[in-house]
Structures are given as C-alpha cells and as structure tokens.
Amino acid sequence: MKYSITIQNQHFENLKENLIKVDGKERVAFIICGRSIINDIEERFLSKEVHFISDDKLLISEHNQVSWDNKYFIDVLKKAEVKNLAIVLVHNHPEGINSFSPIDDNGEFHLFKLAFNRNGGANSHASLIMLPDGNLIGRVWKKDLSTESISMIRVIGNKIKLNYPKQTDDYESPEIFNRQQLAFGSSLVQDLSNLKISIVGAGATGSATALLLTRLGVGELCLIDKDTIEESNLNRLHGAKMSDVGQFKVDVLKKYISDIGVGTKVIAVKEWVSNSNCIEQLKTSDIIFGCTDDHAGRILLNRFAYFYLTPIIDMGLVISVKKDSFELENLQGRISYLFPGSDCLITKGNINIDIAYSENLKRNEPENFKKLKEEAYVIGEGNPSPAIVTFTTQIASMAVNEFLNRIQGFNPQALTAPHKIFFFHRGIEIFPENITENECRICGKSNYWGRGDMEPFLDMVI
Image 1 (cartoon, rainbow, N blue to C red):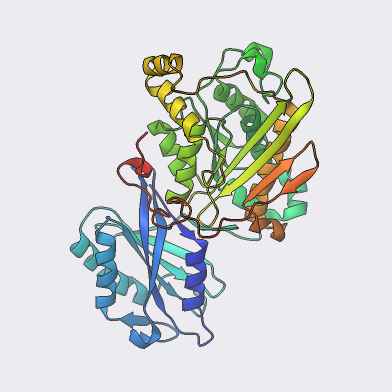
Image 2 (image 1 turned 90 degrees about the vertical axis):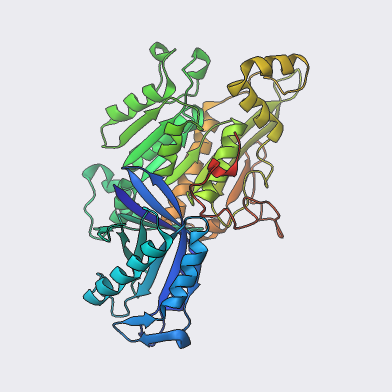
C-alpha cells in the first residue's frame, strides 16, 4: 500500500508564510483533505483547506517544540467529520532536522488517537514536517496508531513540485539520458522516473505523446483507449504498421514502447475512460494527458483535474477546409493545463455539451440513440475530419514541452498561461487569460477542489 499527498500551491504558500519565520520557532497548521483510495494500492490525501493556530493561542512555541490547546484541533475534526475528510497535521522544524523527533512521536500519537476516537472510521490521517527551505517529509497514522512513510508529496500549481524519499541532486541517471541531463540536470531525470502518467486516447496525438514521454524516461505509462487500428489511422499513428490493422491501439503501442527498452513500465487499458479500471489508473496517476476527441470523456477529465488535484494537459487540433475546395480554412492547435487556479475546458468553450450527451447516449443506449438520431434529436457523426501527422505530432510535442516546463521551469513566463492556442496557418499564438468573477461550479468555485472520493463519482451522473 502506497501513501501520498497532493497540496494545492496556494495552500503550500500559506503554510510557508505562516510556519517559517525569522524567529526560528515551531508553529502548527492543520490541512483538511479529501481522500482518493484504491484498496491495497494507494491512499492519497488531497488538500481542501488549511487552518492555522495563531501565535498568541499557542501554549509553547520554541525552536524544538510546539503545543496548543486541543480545542482548536477538535474544531478542525468537526469540520472534517461532516464529509469524512482526513486531517493532516503540519509543523515546521526551524533547525532543518528532516525526521520526526521523540517529542513529535509522543504528541502525534495522542493527537491521532483523539482523532480516531472522536471521528471514527478506518481511514488514515497524516502528519508533515516543513523544513526551512519549504521541503516536506511526511507519514501516515493508521487506525491502529501505527505509521507508514509518505512516498510522494506533490505541490500542484503553475509549477509541479515533488518531494519523495531519496530525492537528491546527486542522482546518477542511466547513460541513455546523459544528453538530456546535460540540458536539465539529473534531478529532472530522477523526477520523471518516479512519475506515473496516464494518456487518455492512443490515436495520433496520444501515440506521439506516449513515445515522447518514454524517451524522456517517465517511469510508468498507462494507455487508455478501446479503439482498434484502421487502415486510415496509419498516416498518423506512431508505432503502428499495416500488419497491426484490427488490433487494439494500446496493445500495439505498448509493445512498441517495450521494444524501445528504456525501462518504462506500460499498462494498457482497453476501456472507455469512465470504466472502473480506468478510474483506478487515473486516481493513481501523477499527471494525465487528454488526447481524445470524445467530448463526454473530456467532461470527466475536466472535473477530475479539480476533484483529485491531478494536473491534466489536454490537447486538441482542428483542421478544416473550405467547402468544395482544398483550401485551408482553419489549422488550429490547443493546449490546456488544468489545475485549481485555471479556467476549465467548459469555461473556455472547448467542450460541446450537446455532443457529449450524444456520445454518452450512443455508448450507453445505442438503440435509443439510433431512434433519436433518426428523429434529429441528437447530433450524429459527420464526415471524418482531416488529419496530418506533422501537425498531430507537433501539438503532442508542444504538450509534452508544456509538461516539462511545468515540472522544470525553463520558461517562467509561459507558466502563467494555462491555455495556449496556436493558429498554424497564420503564425499566430494567443494565450487566453482566466475569466474574472468566474461563476463556473468546477473551476470558478473551490468547493470541489480536492474533494476526491464521493458518491456519485465527481458529483455527476454519467
């Protein structure tokens, strides 16, 4: 069983501001977290809100210990109890000691004993230590009051920051990544090797994305797509050949990646993204790439980014020609980086709700879909869209570079633009800003951010 925590960047910055001060004293905070649980695989804590105890209400605040009246902790427990949320205790070590002290062990034992006795339930809580440089270490407190180390701490915002055991600037990368290391250093190679990335859609952009991430050294890829290869796909499907026609896209791509031999583990899931197997893969992913034209699938991914604090890089490409001619009318690519703090795909108009309804109806009620299509109540399939491998590959490359920038920060200015649109036929790029006073219940309000598991899933009926 693996344990991890994902913290919204605004929460992380608030923690740094309130805990780390020049007087060198310990302070304390509590994070109320949503939960993401896959039994026997991973339990993930997702920051929802942060509560601080002000200096004047602390009983002791010294360089090596901190204490407080437990009535403040009970107030936080009451808030968490309503929706069965988790509590994460955070305190700082001003002297930079990167381990839990005997004082920490004793204090936390009694604190979490109180938490389990009061709120009940078998699910875990956790504690974190913040060091003077902002790095974090953590452990989980289980129902029996035993502890387990937290294997990954993510901070999600304009940038993606990672803390995990054995993370070091002295990491020796495999020889195959030496030239990459010359550009970005060995720490990026180590970070990538510790990530699991899911790719939803294994077509033109998805197959290109998968191969690029493989050659960058990503530790694990999950490929999600239930379609098989058609002959018309071969002009743009990376890793596929004529003899693969009729086989599942993810199976062919998985074999191709395995044959490259750089050590990337690959999981192939031949299901639509709302399938329970797919959801389990998404919930255990660090990053997700949306490479699907399916509007219903995009709605699910769009909500998932905010509920589960999992950054999603969604990409799209539109090629159209004028009627009765081969003259280009539009050649437009888009990359969207979805996280709490950015406008979502619905707010930006990248999802057509009517098409999504038709897709769901066709998938779940094919006979009803056929009837309503005949009666012109739903949108049916039109002619296939144009597709050119150079442009599908280009947008995939730009999306992977977007990911690299988010984790490495080689272009700080671009980090402030979560949405990017490229008009290739005009040589124009635009970067739409977030909408002010956004009323969207997904991206404009914070109620769902970090909510994690709930019924119904993502608070939606599929």
